[in-house]
Length: 447
Image (cartoon, helix red, strand yellow):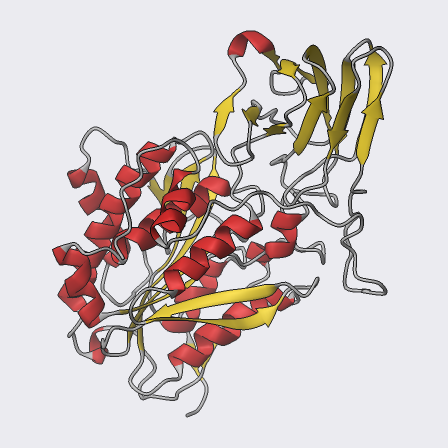
C-alpha cells in the first residue's frame, strides 16, 4: 500500500493514511458521562463533567455539549438571548498556560449565537476553529472573533443549526484518529504493533516497530506527551509517512534501520481535553527521571528493552511537540553523541534544503528539566531531540518541511549506519545497563 500525498487541509495527514489503509475516516466518538474509573486513587486531576447544556428560551432551542473524546468545557451559562458564556479551566494548577477547549453546539433551527469563552489562568487566547464533522477545520473569520491575550473573555459569533458545529482552540487529532493511523501503520510490511503498557485509565500505550530485515540500528519516535499539541502529532505522522514510503531514500533507509514509534504517550490527557498533564496531574515531559506515571514508565521500559538487545545501537530519539513556532530543541552544544554532531548537521541540512524557511534551534532549552530528550541522550548517548511545530503552522507546510527533514535525517543516519561502536559513547558491550545521572554523560553500572 502506498501512503498518498496529503492534499486536503488540516487533518488530512491522518485522513489520507486511513483511506489508503482501506479504512474510513474516524468520527469523534461520544464519551461516557463519567470517565473516572471507580475507586482509582491514581487520578489526581479535576475531571470535567460530561454533559449537554440545553437552553430553550428564547426559541430556537440551543444545545452545547462536551460529550466526545477530546472535548473540554467546565461550565456553560446563558447570559442573554442566544448569548452563552463557556468556562474553561485547566485540570490542575500551577500549569503551563497552554489552554485547550473543544465543544459542540447545535440549534433546533438556524440561528445566530454569541459565545463568550472565559479561559481561566491562560495568558494566550487561541483563536477558535470550527468544523462540521470534527475532522476538517477552519478558523473563525476575524470579523466574527474578538479575543486578545490577557482579555477576560473571547467573543465569537456563530451561525448554527440542526447539524452540530464543533468548536475548538485548534484542529483536532483525537485518540481514535491517532489509533486508527497507528493501526494502519502496523499493517505495513515488516511492521508489528504491541501494547507496552496501560495509562492510568487503562488505555493502551501502543508501540509500532518496523523491521524489514535491517540490522539492530534503531530510530525511536514518540509524540503527544502534551494533550493539546496536535501539530506535533501531524508532524510525527508526516515524518513516519515519509520514512515508510516507497522513495529510493526511504527504501534504502529501512534496509539499514529499524524504526520504532509511540505516537500517543498520553491518551488519557488527550481524551479528557487536558491542557498539559496525565490523569495523575503530572507533566509527562517532566517525568523522565521519577517515572511516577505508568505512561512514561511504559515507554522507558520499551526503549531500555530495545537497548539491551544483542548488538542494538540507538541512533536517534525524536519527540514531537507543539509550541508557538517551529523549532528544534537539541542536546547541549557540548554533548558528545553518536552519530557525532548529528543534531547540528541535521538542522543545517534542513536549512540548506529550505533556504526560504528559517530553521530555528536551541541547544540549551530546559537543560535542567527531566524531559524525554535529556533522558534519551543521557541514557543512550544518541541525540535526543524535541521537534516542535507551531500551533498555527498549516498542514501543508508541516507535510512539506517535516518530510524534507525526514529525508535529511535519513541521509545523515545512513552515513553512520556502519560506523564502529567506538565512535560514540555507547555502552562498551551488549547488555550493559546505563543509569541516568542528574547531569553529565551516562554512567556504566555493570554488565
